[in-house]
Amino acid sequence: MRITVSGLPGSGTTSLAGHIAKTHQYHLISAGEVFRRMAEERSMDLAEFGNLAEKDPCFDRMIDEKQKEISLAYEDIVIEGRLSAWFVPDADLKIWLFAPLEIRVMRIQVRDDFRDIGTATRLTQEREASEAARYRSYYNIDIHDLSPYHLVLNSGLWEVEDLGMIIDSAIDVKLSQTT
Image 1 (cartoon, one colour):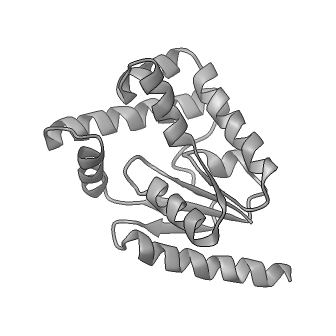
Image 2: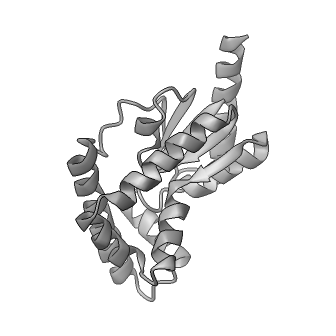
């Protein structure tokens, strides 16, 4: 089964994708982690690397093509990334996570070790604007278009394990439809 998990920064996609992969013993690829590694390799923070990616589409395209290639190499895989549902159109289950901005910013502040909530909010909003502009420019994709998704879940309401139970039910239904 191929499953995509997408959402805005701080919505919990990496945590949920990891949970699903571990629970079901599926392979996992995370576009966000690849993007972070690329930024670190260049001694840049996410905002700086995002600005670089705005000027040179090769970074986004490399990540997007790599996740598509890897997703086709495995039958049981979780693909986590903002555009995964768009680049893995034949995925069996496509999930979009959302959460209110305040919750996402609090998560990002802790994860990325920002000193204050104001900085975390500003950088999160800048990152989202940068990504939305790149996706529209490079692929004509509106990140707010949820039409490719089978499930849209509010990660501000539940813990990752609770979301995992919802996903487990969806997986069971999908698997029963194929047998």
